[in-house]
Image 1 (spheres, rainbow, N blue to C red):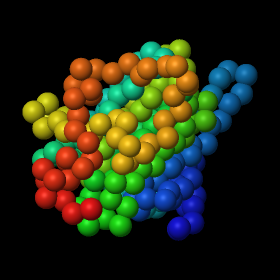
Image 2 (image 1 turned 45 degrees about the vertical axis):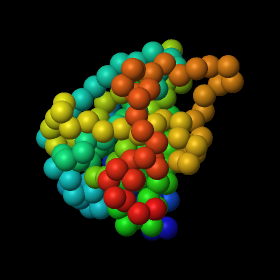
Image 3 (image 1 turned 45 degrees about the horizontal axis):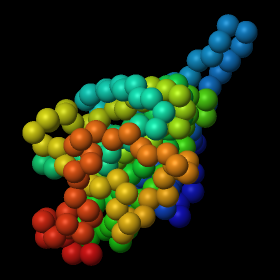
Image 4 (image 1 turned 180 degrees about the vertical axis):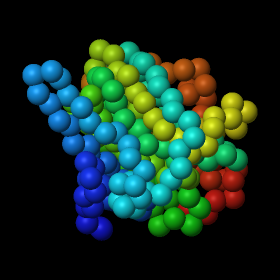
Length: 195
């Protein structure tokens, strides 16, 4: 695995999946409060992330909500995701045909206190599970949202095997749409992707 890169107030940490990068941000604080940069293009380029973001999104979710696994089909989005307040377990799944890690997942605990971000390139499904009472989630995208271009995967597909930190006896709160996503095997077959 490649080594971490420090540039400015950011540390870029490679993960087990090529292109997926954890980003740690330096926060400065005193008696007044705190300040941190969450994105600076020149530092991100120096850290190996040369992406032009065009849309910012923000959501608020309550404890036990699971959103995902989502992607856009014809307009894939690279994303830089973070938590402003609260705590989530964030996940991405490699859907890039021909990738040596096709079907593999990477997860990270993102909180309003650890200031960690996750960069997810094109070709991934994305989702998260809320661990705190509430969580405010923010993310940058390099393409605009296209409502008729949504795709998804089953969040608990045993073949993918995501180790969600869901407490015993808790059933995740899902949207109707997220309950109906196909398995990874069905998605591969429908898209002619060899596993």
